[in-house]
Every structure is written in structure tokens, then in C-alpha cells.
Length: 557
Image 1 (cartoon, rainbow, N blue to C red):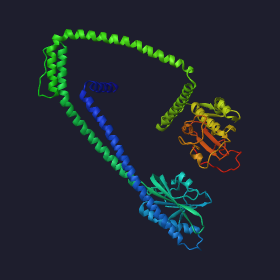
Image 2: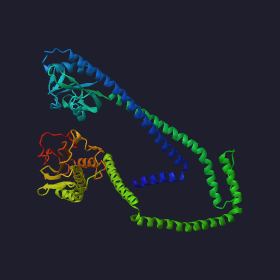
Image 3: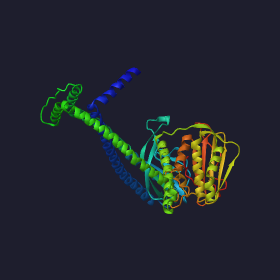
């Protein structure tokens, strides 16, 4: 089997080397495939954008009509109607009926008390009213999973806010699932708006879910049609190229055979001349060359010797100026400290920026490995206390420069099965980030472990995080204050890489912060490979915080 495969591969390789027609056909088909792919991709993207734009306009208009109708019906509600539950059901039930006919789903969530949403369970409860399901104060289309609302949109409507929309994954119970509990999930658009209920005077949020199944089917049909057309076009291009190539290659092959005979000493070999085109002129020129070859062979040999000598002499003469240029370059490099202060400072800045560029390039390459799924772990039994102490020793000069004191709190060993290089990079990013934002305060690094997980927390008492920023700090190139100077020279990718390293271990990387009250970053890793973490050994909200409410939005977990 292996011998047959090797023999076949050798034949294909030999055909590629020997056949000009094969190379021309394959190269033309490959180039045509690239062009067709680019054009097809652009066409699909433009079609997709057009379909989405039309769909967005349609769903926004339909959601606006539903919201306007709801506000109108609420405005007509009697002032003495204080049954909020019935008023909610009466408000949503007609929307559910229209949604079943028009292909969209509805979710009523709320109420909002002040600027803080009332917590409600996400699981469905028994049917209430005209087929609407109620989960706490959630009323939604039967089968719809309330978790289809993105966290970003829930955060947007945690206080009175204007209408907005976003893409989401709509999860709903399958119509054919029966009692199995199977669910379907598909892309869709969710539009959110708020209404005020007269019965309780509270503000509720209406979420309208519009699936993108028709657009997806249209794109799939277009893609299949493009693939079919591309395949037929490539076959046609290959056939046309083969025919055209044969017309050119056949005379060339005849010329090759004549040249081989001529090279073998058959100086009387001549080519047949047909027509007046370029190939006929080539045959004529070949015949003239063969006629004059015997008379000129000695001259050609002499010319060959002259040419070889010329090349040798030129090569020898070029070595001298090249050596001189190299020596001059070394002298300039060795004398760089003798330059004037402005030039020296420019050289220092150039070196610093080159270092930062190399760091950024390394980070981008690392991010690309994560995006491509090519990152792997080199696991070993690791003591997180040793890792923290190494990082603290490395970052102490930066801390001393900023007037920051690093305090390590650890008792005994804290073992975990992890990648030493990646964990050290995570801890270094967290500590350097804390030093950069500590503003001459202390940075407290805590290490602890339980039966499931090992954790490292980094606490600073600097500028802290604005509400909602804890969910954004791990985004690439995100900065809490773009105008703030960075003395540590960050690239904007450190926390993003730290999060990817943490996810690669199956752990958590979370953030907590309060404006003016500092911030805390918590790394939690499973002690064993593939382990499941149900609770960490260190709290996310520091014990010294004056308020015991979380101001983070799940950052990186």
C-alpha cells in the first residue's frame, strides 16, 4: 500500500516537473479559484449585509409598532386597576399571539426599582393566562429560554434606557422535543424597549426576539449556488486552458525534440515551418541557428571562456567595496555613544519603541494562536507560591520606581497541575497592572487553595474600576482611561492573553473594582487537569471593601 502510494506520488511529481501544460493548467485553475473565492466571498458578504440591514430595519419597525401599541393600551388602562399581574399578562398575551403568527417571540422582564433590576429566576414556571409563561416577574412566549437575552442588554436595561437592539442566540424548546426537553438554538436579533405599568408604576422591559432563519437559508442557498457555479467555471477554465496550452505546447515539444537531436550531434536536424505566426518564426530561427551552429561553435566556446572570466573578475572586484561598506557600518555602530545628546536620545527612544513593538508582536502572535486553537499546555505540578515570589522579585524594581509596596499573603504550599510559563505570565500581568494603577499604595497578593482549586488574588488601592468596567477589562486593547499614561509600557493585550491562558487551564479570571476604592483580580485554577471548580478558596469582593455588593459583571469567568 505504501509502495503504491509512493509510486503514484512520484508519477505526479514527475509530471509536474516535466509537463509545461500541467503546470499552466494547474496554475491557471488555482489562480481562478482564488479570484472566484474572493469574488464569491465579497458577494456573500454584501448579500449578508444587505439581508441583515433589511431585516434590522424590519424588526425595529415591528418592535416599535408593538411598543407603541403596548403604550397605547396601557394609557387606556383604568386608573383603579391595581392588579399588576393581570395587567402584565394582558399586555403580553396579544403580543405572544401576534408573535406566533409573525414569527417572533416576546419577553417581559422587570420591574426596575430605582436603577437596580429585581432579581428573577431564569427557569420557566407554569402557564399563566392565555398561554404565557411566568417566571417570577418574567412573562414570555411558551418555549422561549429567557437566557436568550444577552447579559450586555440586561445590563443596558438595568435602569431606564432608550430602545436598543443586538444580535443574540435564541434558545427555545423544540416543537418535536416532546418530554425530552431538547432545545433549539439559532441566530437572531433581540430588540429591547421599556414601558411603564400603571398598576404598580414600575418600569418593565420588553424584549422582542426575531429569528434570522430565512436570512440564513437564503445565504445557504446563495452559497450552494456559488459553489456549484464556481465548480462548473473551474472545470470550464481548466478545459479552455488545456486546449489553448496544447496549441502552444505542441510546437514547443517539436522544437525540444529537434534541440535534443542537435545537442546529440545531429547538426542536420531541422524543424518543419508552417504558417507565419510566432511559432513559425521560432522554427525558422531555430533552423538558421542550426545552420550556423557548426561554423560558430568555436567562437561560442571562446565567448564562453571570456564570459566565465568576466564573471570571476567582477565577483572578485565586488568583494572589496562590500567589505569597506561593512567596516564603515561597524565603526558607526561602535561610535554611537559619541553622538550628540539629541541623536543619542533618539536612539534610546527608538530602542524602547522597538522593544515595545517586539512585545506587541509577540502578544499578537500569542493571541493568534489562541484564535486558531493552536495553544497547548505543558502541564506540571506547580507551586503557585513559588510563581508569585518569582514574579514579585522580577517586578520589584518597577514597584520601587512607583513607590509601591508588594505584600504577599500565603500559608504553606499551593499546588496545582498547570503550565508554569503561562501561569507566570498571568500573575506577572496582574501584578504589573496593579502596580501601574496603585498610585503609590500597597499591592496585596494572596495565595490560597482548597480541595478543588488554587487561587491568586491581586488587590490594589488605586483608581479602581467604574461600574460595568470589570466586564470590559479583559477585552483586547481596552483601557479604562485612554488619557492615562502607562509607565509600564503595556500593549493592551496582557489581560486578554491572561484570560485566554486561564480558559486554557479550565479556570476563572475575574475582576472587581470600585471607583476610588481600588480593584481586585482573582485567578482560580483547578488543582487537577480537567477538574471542575464549584467554589474558589479566595473571595472576589475583598473583605476590606466597605460595601458587600458586587460591582463586576462576570469579567472573564
